[in-house]
Each structure stands twice: as C-alpha cells, then as structure tokens.
Image 1 (tube, rainbow, N blue to C red):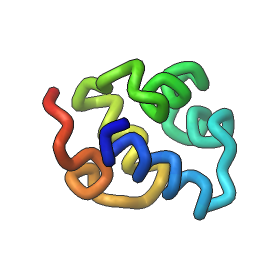
Image 2: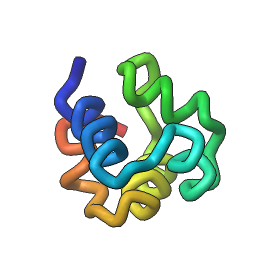
Image 3: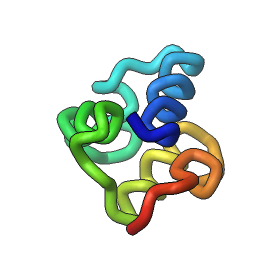
Length: 68
C-alpha cells in the first residue's frame, strides 16, 4: 500500500469519520473513499482536492507521491 493511502485512512480515523461520512463531506461516493484507501483507485486531482478539504489538510500533504 502506498503511504498516501495509509495517511488517508489514518487521518479519517483520527477525525472519527467513517468512510460514509468522509464521502458525504467530500461530495463523493463512499466506494471512492474505500477504493482510494485500499489502493484500488488513484484519484484525479479534483477528487484529491475534495478529500483533502473534507479532512481539513493540504492536498499535497495527504497525497504526496501520487501522480495525477
């Protein structure tokens, strides 16, 4: 698993959010969050931005190492 995927799961957990809650806050399907966390999906730039904003972190910090 890429470190970015682990960071996403860790930050979501630290904020007490379920995948469903994060998906709702980011305006994304819950399956997208699941697939990103498990490394089955490399999110596009807009998706990365929505997830980072929903978590309140800089996109570069959260998705460091992923290519768009």
